[in-house]
Length: 375
Ligand SMILES: Cc1ncc(COP(=O)(O)O)c(C=O)c1O
Image 1 (cartoon, rainbow, N blue to C red):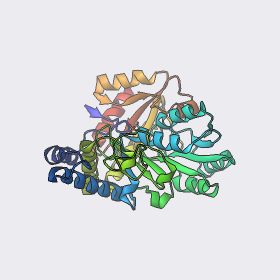
Image 2 (cartoon, rainbow, N blue to C red; image 1 turned 30 degrees about the vertical axis):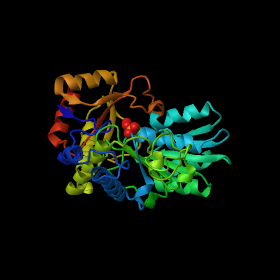
Image 3 (cartoon, protein in one colour; image 1 turned 180 degrees about the vertical axis):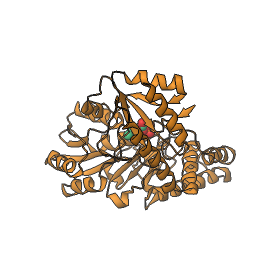
Image 4 (tube, rainbow, N blue to C red; image 1 turned 120 degrees about the vertical axis):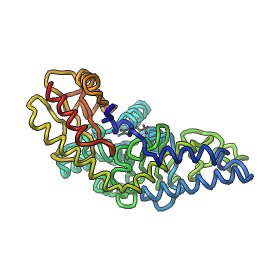
């Protein structure tokens, strides 16, 4: 199989990911933070070190400001449901994933107001739209760092600057950029960042993280045992464990840590360069095919994600042919980001999304192009 669906989840996972998972399974089987005997203390130490290494990699100064979650979806839910109260307003963009949109609509039914800003290729125009969308009661700006449909990058730093001037907070969805492009809270001034562990960070599904600038702004989404302050009836929202009720997914955390080790060993920039070269090559070759429409805001590679359609064909049919004729795995449909499709007029047909990873080769891209050519 030729796997080109890395924006959904990366595959294959690097050896480092598998080795680190094995390491956790063999050595760190106790419940971290729940016992004083050496086996449990070792698990706690492992967790502490993993948090520090992952935080360092993500450019987070204080490791305890990184909460482990089950993924970006949980991270978004914690922030949106904590910050927004009836009467508050939020601004979000048309490239947001349902991980964000659905909590937004849930909150809107409960008295929160929301304005969606259409993403576009001209940064200044997009930022002006964000500026105009702000109101007196705007509490939060939600913006993804990069789109899982078009592969475009959003101007996080500038958007965070606008929010700061209006005394609003910013939640950035880093699902598509973490591990691929360096964007830290330090450099961007973003207050909350949600991470998926299973995409560019090369871990497995069911693990992610949330960067929190100020814990007093948040409430835990899930209540339960945290290993500390157990005599309290109410859960204390202290960093990080106050937001991590229940026994932690140490295997998942280990996988994410191993995935990051792989990125460090091979070099993040080198990996990105390879993926960007594949993307640029693919885009250039697609230009020769008259019946192919590419959905993008700008020329050239940003993230290694390309959405297309073949004139007169449903995206599902194209993906099916790619699978049957070429053993190529791509994702068709709306990619959980329907506003982006509405903007392109593809909400009924969907698009076919190719998303490249470190393992993909030019030969594989040629193979995909050859099949597209026959269509
Ligand atoms: C842009 C974006 N946000 C959020 C998510 C959800 O992330 P997770 O699977 O970690 O919950 C995804 C994954 O598909 C995504 O692409």
